[in-house]
Length: 165
Image (cartoon, rainbow, N blue to C red):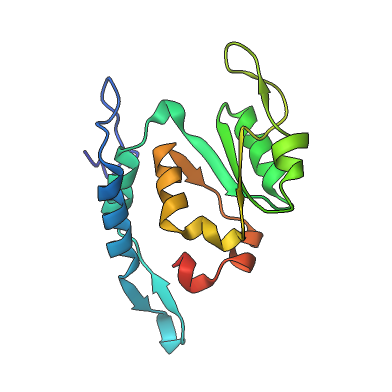
């Protein structure tokens, strides 16, 4: 399945076999516990998720339904605009009280063929706090919609680094 000289995933006709989401949760939670000390004795931890674990999660994705996801902040509209231009659907995690630009003003409107007519945000999920994005509930949702999360500065500002690791 892996080809070290080519892409990490090779898709066979008919797409990859879907695996249960629970299996992906277990792989990631186990991998996230594999911490290493940072180089030169720095007092930080670096969480390492093995390439094979990432590939296992991605094998459960449907390549034709990949969504680009991000935190709803100053750069979210740029991320979503680029994703729409490249033909992807988008998902923005918003904090309660800050959802209007994403859920209302920049909500994507698509034609009957699925092409974007205007707007850039297909789905806006309102969270109580941004830090909820790393909870198992929302991680499972990301995997269920074949979501690829694009971190931005707000992600590391609003979400605890230990939770991110």
